[in-house]
Length: 217
Ligand code: FES
Image (tube, rainbow, N blue to C red):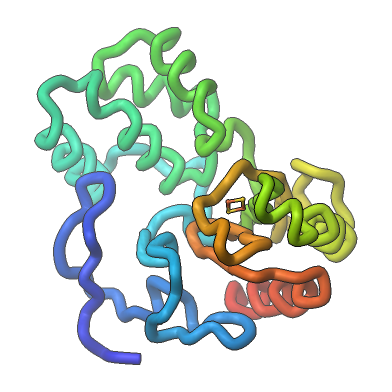
């Protein structure tokens, strides 16, 4: 693992060199045999959003986040065109996009609340209600399904003692099913916040959850 500042490929106006180590972006290590320093089929773990730390009451578009919004806006011909990344930024800050957050985004982009709500509620990747520190999205699409995704979902629900979409009592986990995560060659694929865990089997689930909890302490 190198100490060189991590080069982010750019997301939501946040492009360039950061004072983040690769460990800070990817997590301390990967569960199982997956190498922490590469060889991972997915780029998802390189995106510094949907972090475990969520602040539902944090101000939107203030300070550094105001600069981020400005950068986002500079990339688009109109404010309306920047709606998706602006909603993504709101979710990055607060962990979910509530009706109040949608209104704030509408104000910032000079759009109607109805328009922003129509867009935000269309996309499943915007969480419309609070989720746990770790949002566990198990792909149950065809390839993963054939490889036993339903059993993986059951294992996560059992470990977290929740129903689908419910947040565990300790606030750590919300488990949902997801459509294809584009890692069909590595079933069952599970996206937890912005990290992919591939070839997940039910027996690995407790280890993954314990690892995530320990990482957040
Ligand atoms: S079917 Fe699961 S990642 Fe495509």
